Amino acid sequence: MKNAELSGFLEFLLAVGRLKRLPRTGWLDRGVPPTETESVADHSFRVALIAWLMADEQPELDRDRVLKLALVHDLAEAITGDLTPYETDHLHSIDRNRNDFLNQRHVASPERSAHKKIAENAAFMQLTDSLTESLKVELRELWQEMVAKTTPESQFVKEVDRIEAYLQSTEYLQNDPELPMDSFRLEVEETLTTPSAIALRAAIQTNSGRN
Image (cartoon, rainbow, N blue to C red; front, top):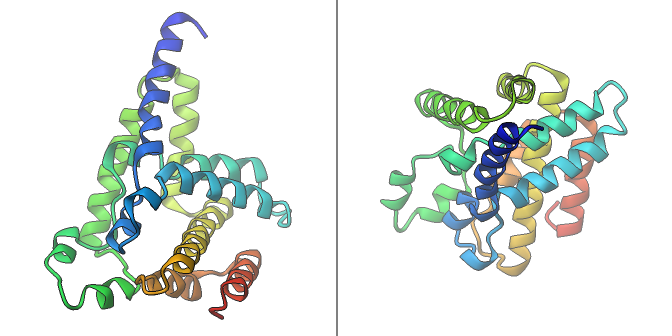
């Protein structure tokens, strides 16, 4: 890379580096101590590793593309923050029924989904704007594929995204069984279709004693 290109590349690296210091909102909302809360980068690392390793058992998938999609799937949060499917203002107004609310499986409203999509798309364009044209085009194509979720690889990565969050929830429950984590179990019970993801879900449930 030329000096100007390196400068833009460094700008990108510094921006996405914020993910290492960005705690996952859902865990904080559920009472995980801040010192024990994983970052978005922590989550993304294990999603990428799980997706790449499990894709080896599915020859119909482009394994390299799976890894790339997993690596980019949360990059926009470096700017937008970790947005939840529920309204944070509503959560903060709840007192007695807070845990009941958090234990439910949450699906974002069409309005909230649209807002999140617009915000994250703008953030991703901003993040990648300093890169060389070839890197910019490649990353943006991967991002749009992940957003659309129309390819087998993007759909697989989304399932791995969910199963990793479920795995993390069971780890937090080992330290505090009273935390409201049912929503993550409900999501993987209701949405997984990939045999390998379903098998991993069963293994996690057996390991955690929650099958």
